[in-house]
Image (cartoon, rainbow, N blue to C red; front, side):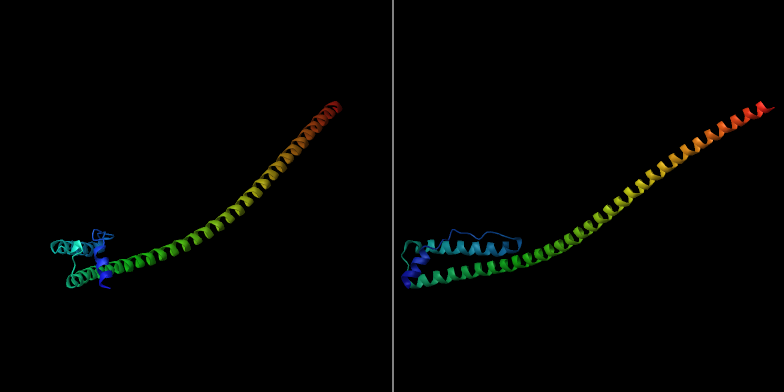
Length: 165
């Protein structure tokens, strides 16, 4: 087991730094990066990176690495909680947007039906107007013909009266 621990410790990637993934975690990530730097410095000072690790040094190194990993784990858990809250908030907004979209689509459909209805009414009104105009024109023509006929009768009657005098 000590060999496995030593192997793990010597192969641990200390050059991996924690990235600042959100403003909330900047301070924690900086602390973690400083902690890693301190561990690296400690390893370098004690020449522990050269496989000359005794049991006490191994345990000390394991404790430091364990603390760093626990801190990283806590940071990741906090970030996970924050992201879960953000996802939940976004899902609520999406649900609201979907509901609003359905309302607007329903309203658009209703308005389209009204437009079709009013267009039909307008078309019928135009047909009736055209029909009335045709009737008035026919009536005007009949009236003009009756007037012309009456004028001709009047002229004929005037001639007859003049002829009788």
